[in-house]
Length: 307
Image (cartoon, rainbow, N blue to C red; front, top):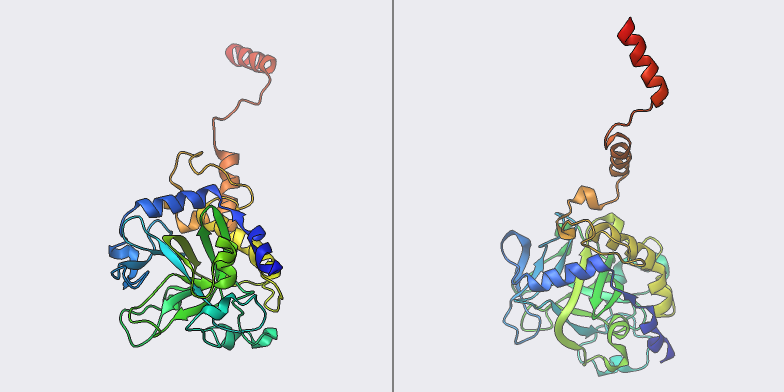
């Protein structure tokens, strides 16, 4: 029990540019057109199938987030799939728990871990596969299994991993689900296997590319805190690259007078080429200065005049 209470301490304040993105995504209305990777998903059984895997305001090819209709994002149902050891019993109330996750069982054997553990690993459920329609596979847009996902819940930022997918366990293709460990970090021990967070105000951002794979993840951690700490530095780096500021030192997104959400991929990925361009612009930019001392300049002009 103490471990799950303590997990709330690991939450981070949402950096200013990510918060600006959160507000912009909510105020932008429905996600449609080319910004919608796939539409037609249900946030709840009664939501009408209007939730979308969305890319609006993100640089092309950098990832996606879940966007509901109007000002809705997604809710947070509780997933207790995977390794069933440890925990405080709150997963026992779940009526659809499975003994394995989509990616943990297949990909963690080399780490000495049988599967992801919903009581320890903060995993997010993304993608829809099954005999229903529509379906969506995040891998088609470059999001790797077990890669880092940023979750904004309230005024807190939690890092999770893409650990499971939505299957055929509901009448409709559902979205908006996370492990008990992640939900507890967001909302405390009031959540359980059958009691999640119903409001559609949760932002899930999946990062595309190999750089989102957690290089230092402690998969064999025995607590949420130990695992979260092992992926936090890389999560901070991904957030800084994509949204333009640091998760530990928030800064104003409007200080430069530009829209942080319309940054091109090349200007937001921290490439060394961009750093070199920046150095050259500082060296060559601005008004040229006269480096000849004034007395010498007067004498020189006089000699030229009498020659």
